[in-house]
Image 1: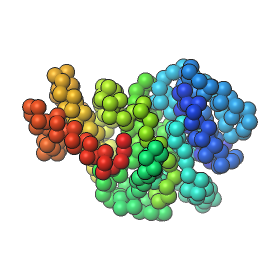
Image 2 (image 1 turned 135 degrees about the vertical axis):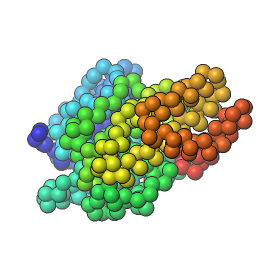
Image 3 (image 1 turned 90 degrees about the vertical axis):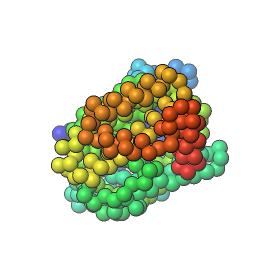
Image 4 (image 1 turned 180 degrees about the vertical axis):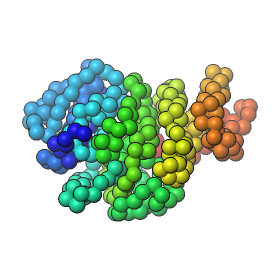
Length: 345
């Protein structure tokens, strides 16, 4: 087992991030010598991302580390961060996002308390905030109804997660050893890999802790973001690949042995992912994407035959699954409505 030099490692994958990466890094520097910041320059070519990374390493040599690698996408940056981490805990922060100072200080204090008391924590969960800066809108996602607050708990203790309350990369701080044990490796040149990060390592966690603080600030509004509707439609094959990897790594017997509630949580998460994939493939209205939709469900049936009937039954009740030209139109309206409700795009 590796010896940890820092309390927590933050990894910031950067690709042509000159315009906003300083804000992200500066928000984390507040943690001082308790933290390690690994700045991954993922083959940036169009701006001064590489120079800025080196600048922070030179200015803060005991905190910041600049890593330059060939372009491999967000997943490759996260993979490198996990590999190089020296912190006991691990957190990913995207280069256009930032962390809240007050919540951050509380988290550092709590992690230190765990160390002092010898308390083993595999996963720390916090709230995150959708920051639609251009519209002046904030949407806090919390887990107060689903998780016990400010106490150690197990998967047997979790409650019901609403449709917009599932874990995402932004809400999770893993013990680094959990990530090493899980051998999670995100695919290169692929978007939406945060869903893999937020599911595959879960079966290696036993002791969980939820702090209801609004820690992570998730910027929404750039035209090139992966959650943008048009962008997601163009990258639907990558979205399907991510869903396939999650399905391939779910072993119901293993998760049931930990807790049936963990199995149910992952099942419901796959159900939501399948809903989004089906809606987008329906929205396009093309024969090619209709075949992809059929292939997608054949994949779930092949890989997860026990879950398939339950997921398919749920999907069969959705209006967006209607055949003919009406299906894509209703699917599109359903997606537009979900954006208004959940404010995720």
